Image 1 (cartoon, one colour):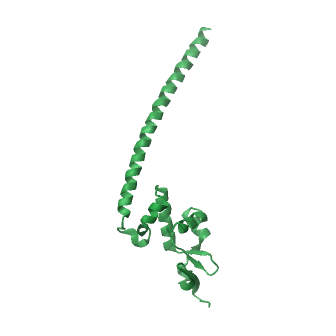
Image 2: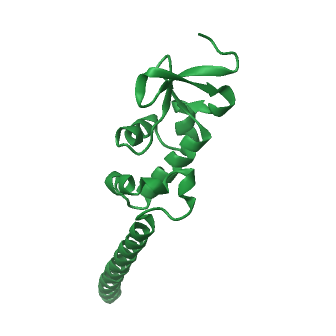
Image 3: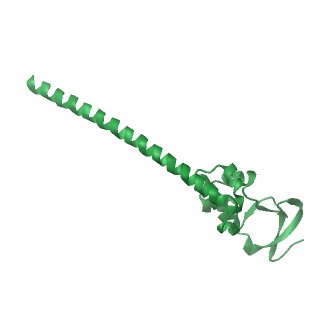
Length: 157
């Protein structure tokens, strides 16, 4: 069966059921979606495999990404870049949908905890940086003394 303004898509949870989706709802295939998100197609498949998103497929098996799919994948990408694991992201999946722009169960608390972790790591890195700068200063002073001493010995010779 062919639909002029629609495409047959395999229902994501029931492969034997086909659903009609208007062409204007189908934004792009995996390659273009990945390019727009600045990630690889492999990452998109990984998000799907980890249960972070469900993507409709056409009869030919190709994934079709809607604008909502891209927004969800972008949120997943951003959470991963912020230090969340896929397990943590899955636990707050309500925060990934467009409906999750408001309060989402557990998500606010997880974000606050992640911020606390990031602050702790930042403080640790600041201390490590200070230690490296102190050591660098000592080494540079030592090199400067050795260079000055070598210059005086050369002048005296």
